[in-house]
Image 1 (cartoon, each protein chain N blue to C red):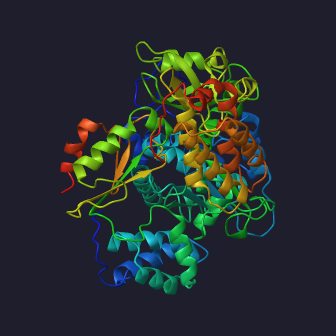
Image 2 (cartoon, each protein chain N blue to C red):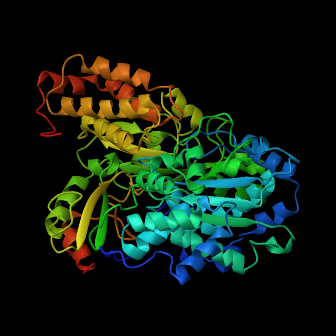
Length: 435
Length: 165
């Protein structure tokens, strides 16, 4: 089931099966639900066999980029004599995204087990789970689960009696969206400012503490035990449209729907079915205007583009956006698109780490120009100026935060230009009275 | 967590120093203890004092400037005293679309803070706006001290605040 609603027939509960069940949080409760059987299985496998199984499942990164997980693991060196690290990215902060928190809160052992298996696959002994500082309750629950796993001998110097060492360490952030960027996250663990690093070197060569490192999202790692126990073929078979999009996906839906929450769907479920059936559709008298399907960094889709769009990597790409993190922001016809795009730009301006000029200046100026348009003080050339700035913010910086700010501006102006023009012409009253 | 304005003694009492050294076993460098150490300082004093920054730099064998740089990067560390209860309310797009501004207005009114970032005259509350708290389906979420509260409404604000004397 998703959360906080009862299971909907349109859902496919795999990761979310035990959401809402407090007993599943405990080590004993997790074992009683079949937990740690996959880790036992993995301890008897070679790293290559683990990686091959994950490759065959078609699992792709659930944090936003959608990179094939097994392939990422295969980039780790062999017999290099260095310590290897796994990082788990639990810095969920992309506006619209609130799915990983349910894994952390309800099935922390699923994540711990996934981390342990991934460590075996990449020849690491240590996993750091970086949890955003604001997730106080999820981090508390996860830390308690880790302590239980050590006490039970599932983790530690002799994990499950295998003679192998497996450590899982919870590291709390302290407020910075940018730490969700993989190398910024590593800097945060190392006790530095969370500035993204220039790549190459890529993490598999020199990541955390300069050592070969793999970093995966919470949902990605939580899927791994299911793949080992039920088989790659079973997982790959969970697909309703594209064979390149396999398995289930947690979609957190927010905004103007009757039942916001986290839903688990088979890849490819039509987006309109998700919004109108699973989430109950719009409130009375309202109609769908736009959807940001994959967290705030992806292009905005119009209602027409949503119709019939399969909710998977390829389907949403064909519609002109991205599945991203699966954080879906639904907007009805009452939404002021100019205001919301300004609000997103303000988010990126606040969260820019400021080391790249195009991002530091671009996010700030984009916000200021959108604010002046909303105050009724915009000039007719402002939209061209915004698009010019957006062009200078795309593909020109160390990380993609800058691109992420440009994306809703570009798609917003292209698809909802009339709303911008209404502010510029004075047909619409200013929405902001002061800066 | 209760925020006291006045720094009282060192961060690293023998007990907290022992906690820090236990954590040190988990990392290959001492610098990696910086975020945990800053959390310890903030919990002890209510904010990260200049004295704490110097103390942490010495204990972790890094420069004061490095610690200062890290403190200024992460928004959850307070570099000045705040109210006894610190409220962080989300107003990013999904929350804004669903009425977060009204919750902010109710918080400012009922805490007596008057404006964002200010501390109420009785020293009880500080209210700040924060970007996405990652609970967009539960509008409006906020953090009050370490407590994550979902689905706050303007009408529910007085009752919520009453739980934090």
